[in-house]
Image 1: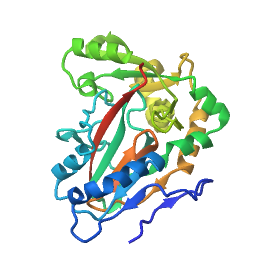
Image 2: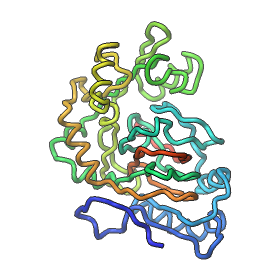
Image 3: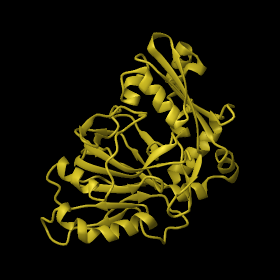
Length: 324
């Protein structure tokens, strides 16, 4: 059965379609059985298109998904310096972001808000929601090309992410860093070139200058690679934004982002960014058993609101950094 999806037309529509659909040769073929025969195709499609959807293969359990993701030669990564709540399902396997079902999670490249990120990310649909719950994707190269030149050039100068961690708002630092002592947090921050400041009531503030765009280390292509539109206060519902500013002040918001020199990013800039992201979005429905494999720099992902049961688990590998 052909893959159906919706998308906005774009200039490079003649290229291979994202995601490339790979299906079993015969009914009942497991992903493990197909892996060796498919590995060359998968690697080629990841370099060119950026994403592969494996549909119709038997994936008996999460352990089989784990083995498939690990079979590409890299150890599966821990989810460190988190920005959203997740739960560990197995070694290197996590739930997708545990935001309430009614919330939309905008397009983003995993951990593009820091300077070390996974190059590869897998999603496995265990249970497909009856309504919504898709994982939209978009080509980060096409986003870069479509972005207005003035915005692209400004983002190329870098961004400054500012985060406040507490038990009252967003996530406590223990959950974000996955440690229990301040010394461990400070050691991580030193390695990652993150500024930190301890606050009252066991609070913490971090500041990190990061990329707004980046060059892919294998293909050499420029990609849009940041999470400014997620971290900026304009991502909040207007009433939530106003309430938080009243409670803690604009300089104490749980998360925010500004230009690398510390000046504020105007809401209108992020509005234009979101328009480009929307224009490049590809949406297709999940089917139980699906495995989506993405080059995390070439392809961004999101989540639509949903109702009913939904379970999608995630794996990541091949850490890359621009700290050097």
